[in-house]
Length: 130
Image (tube, rainbow, N blue to C red; front, side):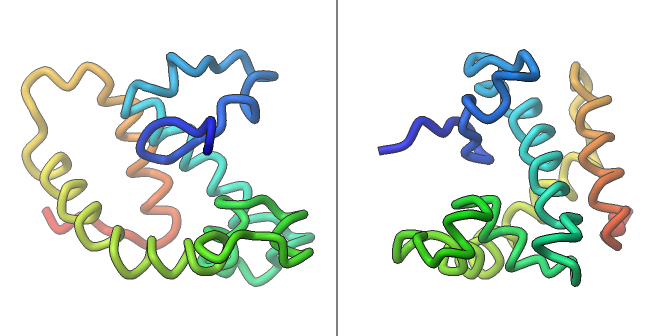
């Protein structure tokens, strides 16, 4: 059982102090935006992830630094989650992202948020093919 919502499976309790509601996280673009911000924090955390290791960042995103370091992630969480994301989800998400970047819908009302996601990806070396 999880309170997490949306594509990025964000627990709204973690963002309540920022005024981000569960209903806001049901919007796919906002959900991805906030998920990327959280993932950036786990990726750039110099105390816990000084080498900016992507599997470690994904594992921490999934179950938190405290649980990860104590070995208290469920058998399908932590590093198992990171492996699943990298092996099964990254390729189709990359294709979908390319579709939006190369041929955006006419009325993409939240383009500024998608641009933020793209800027984040580019900061880690991703280049759109078009």
